[in-house]
Length: 306
Image 1 (cartoon, rainbow, N blue to C red):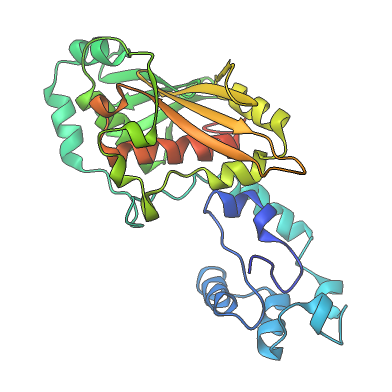
Image 2 (image 1 turned 180 degrees about the vertical axis):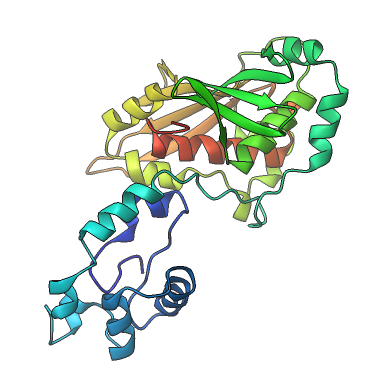
């Protein structure tokens, strides 16, 4: 259940869609117990509403507790207090959690950096549609933003407040390195295919399904918001579906997001399509990762990498 004891529905919260925060769950749930443990471990205290509901064996205060509204709601700090708003503002700046297809945290192999340092930078830039940025950098476009690959510092940077600032986003770091090390000469094909037409199509099943549901939940009935998000990421509108955009997470890796808007008769649908050349440049797990990042970026737009 996504709704906490206080009545907040986590399904409509961006933090849950991005995987940054989880729902408290009903007061009697295992989720509530885990959330309390995490709050005490991280913050040294817990939400009084959640703690009371869990101790009193109450699922939802508004429905199940005869003492509602009690002092916990009257005195704060949750659910809609200054502390809550500050928490939302702070955590919305966090990068989404970077996990691999198995659910483990993404770790960028240091040998990728070493291999990049052993390559000819001009040749890499020519093949990858990037540019050299002396003394030891490579700049390339990522969803309408410029990213600097700092080979000396072994990190990524984005341009903020008139300077290059380090960004902590392991999934993007890994994808950029894999792309630069594997991209070949020649243009993309401009032949659009679905995930089931890729050579490793069997990979994208079960836990490896493409991350489209959070985007569909957010934009399925809000096409104008989808348009604004896609264009904030440099997307180019295409005459496909009810509304569709081509996005470039990497210079030679376009993705096509196609949205069919829901109505009284049909549920909304969302598809992601690729250029035929995508699996020449990226492995199946990297393709999965690119879709994850683009989906998260759509949810975060226009603040992605800002």
